[in-house]
Every structure is written in structure tokens, then in C-alpha cells.
Length: 155
Image (cartoon, rainbow, N blue to C red; front, side):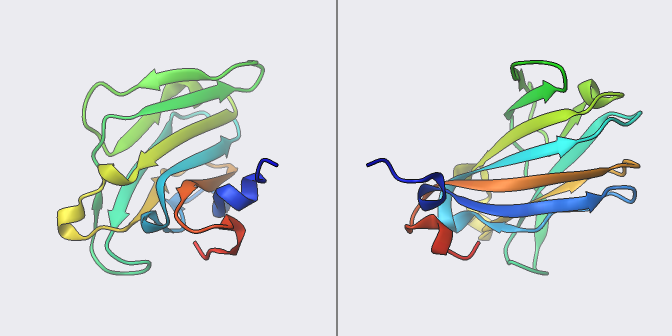
């Protein structure tokens, strides 16, 4: 029998609520799996969606810096039936997406453990979302968990 999703992949709330002042998501430990997908829902707002990815050497406080990566991400604006793959052409810590200017939708972004600066012992990631006068939510999905069942692992 195939395992349930919650047995294979860890899931954690990144953020949920008012984004009027912007804010930073909860940190997630990249040492628990090989990759983390963030699934973000953002309601319509009259500005581009602006996310900045950060890496940290601790679950709280500690040293932090931007996570510079050329990344692919996926967008599905409300009313569309499929996701669109987007590519960044340069190293960047942030994603600014104009498709979310005046539209609501989903974004899926993946971070690989190998993208982190291991020389400086960075072990956690977070996402900073720029201010938008709406509420929004996001979850992390840790894929390829090292310990199973995933639902019993603290993230």
C-alpha cells in the first residue's frame, strides 16, 4: 500500500493572516528533508507580489542572510486551470511577480537544501513578504523527509 502524504512529507504553517505590514514566515529546518515547497495563497491587491527568501543558522535569532538562487516557481492566477512555470534569469533573493497585481492566486516555490550556504552553517529558511493590505496564507511541505512517519517529526 502506498503511504499517505502526511507519512512521507512534513507540513507546517508558514504564515496565515494580515499582511498589511508585511512580515516574515516561520522558520523551517532544512535538515529534516532535502527540499521544501512553499504553497502560498494571496488575495487580489493593487501591487506586485514581493517575496524575499532568507537563510538562518538557528531556529530563532542567530545570523541571517538572503538566499540567492536562480529559481523556478509556479503561478496559478484565479480563473486559470493550470499553473504557469516561471524562471528567474539571475541570482536573486526575491521574487517580484506582476501577475498578482490586481489578481488573486497560488504560487509554489521550492527551495533545495543544496542552495543554502553550508559553509556558514545555515540550516533554516524563511520568507519575507512585502506589505499588502490583504490577508494571505502559506504552508511549507518538506519533501523527502529523512525520518518517517513525517507527521511525528517536529518541524
